[in-house]
Image (cartoon, rainbow, N blue to C red; front, side, top):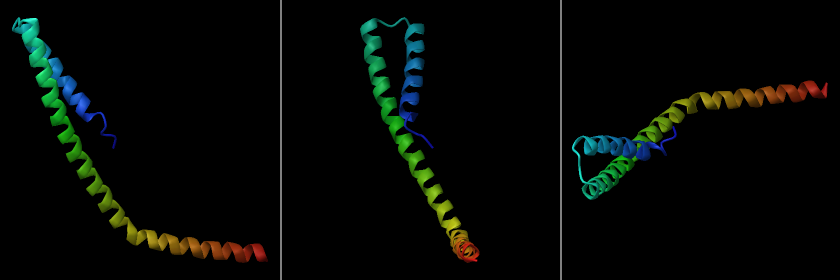
Length: 93
């Protein structure tokens, strides 16, 4: 799963909500910019944490899938080798 954009999406959503709150509260421009900057930094860090958690969980899920698939993978490899042997014998004839 592509998780590269998670921090940016979370940060931008928080910034949008902060903008709406600042407009609704009729904030001064300087105060609004300080508040927006702080909100963007905090939620970017929060987004990075969420991304790390999601990456870790998907990595564990992929490891479980490969562990479950190892038993059938050996059978397929054996079948493939047998098929190659049979094909080689057919070519010799």
